[in-house]
Length: 268
Image (cartoon, rainbow, N blue to C red; front, side, top):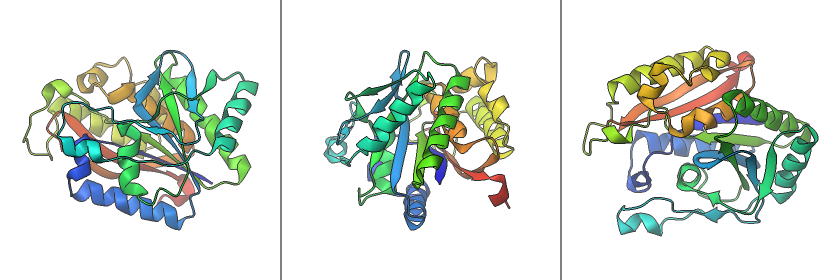
């Protein structure tokens, strides 16, 4: 069994905030733990390579506080967890057999795009986590295919795996307005978000993969070019639809989203 979700990691200030979104992350973590999830694979838009995809294979991925100029309090938070080296190495070895451009690396680790959601979802830190990168040198369709492969390999193992892609679908840092009502999102960004979420709810993943290059896409400037989402829908598979669990804003320029992907047989 492998499940796929896409969540926004938000600002590091999320670490000291309470609210509906934080409560949702905690609830999701409890739900997946109750299902017996025994491995997490996570992809953050902050780990982006130039060409190949990378799989992190250090025994304990480094917790990276890749944010600057924030209050000192936020640098006291860390998330330390074990990797699953057997599965990580197998993922790379099997991918190479099918000529996927995938490499193992000891570099990088869990940046805040990965570990902030994990901090709330799995505070016990007792489930191993494998970080994987996105690639600026690979097309959206290649991310989708790589996600498909991850799903297929995962299903063969009999493991109960959760794949988490993170990022903001609207990421207009130039539009940040401190103190702005968090329910508001920069209007052209919200227009893009609503369109994207409707595509996900309808399972129209081919159309999602064709969004880059459209004017509406660049109005929103999605974080990491939506590559983590393309990976996530690949893991979810074509016979699924997205269930939107949350949509809101942060400081006007950034949207906060949570989408769970369900098989069509599970959709009510």
